[in-house]
Image: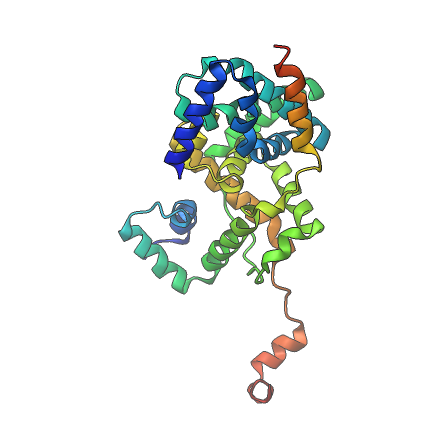
Length: 78
Length: 218
């Protein structure tokens, strides 16, 4: 069985599906038994759902219009 | 889909370079949102971010002919946005902080990050991202990351660029993207855990849970 240290060190690659099958199996076996590592894995996964959600950030109203108006005014002069 | 985007982008770029300036609007439309987020993550201020994006877009337009590989427009454009935002920040901070940030980050990178928070997170409803306090907490946590981690996190986990694209935007190796992303995620998780952790059961509830008679009654 792999250590907690190894599991944590490989967490990002594991979440991104970027570990060899053998290592993935070892990590899964570890997670099955280790509550602390499972908590880290599960919370990281939940965090990525939130931060990856488009709605987490609201673009200021009128941003796009102002950008294009600015470009219209400047590009035609360049 | 990526292929499609590449083909139409190539066409748009060649039209712009041939003199159809107004086509530039169409070229950048898919990147407006991402550009703003990237600039905001560096500047942490709406007005500055907006100004930096405007200036960067203008730079993109004027340097378009210098773009070597049209298939890498997205990566190149994001790099211009990033550089412009950093320049704005330098102006604002007068160099002082920035050099501190960078050196802090590099030395920390070598050390392994050890999680300290092990609380389980509660189930989070999908509309939680619309709550102002959640948004603020995310941006606060992001703002606390040293530059080198924040930029990788924003590109990979917020803008969903892949590892190769992120490496190209930042001009670093793919292995560095992975190392930094790993640390960025662990740090973000660490600072957000107090907000999203399951509430701890009270002593009474824990005692009830241990008592077979009361547990059976529930």
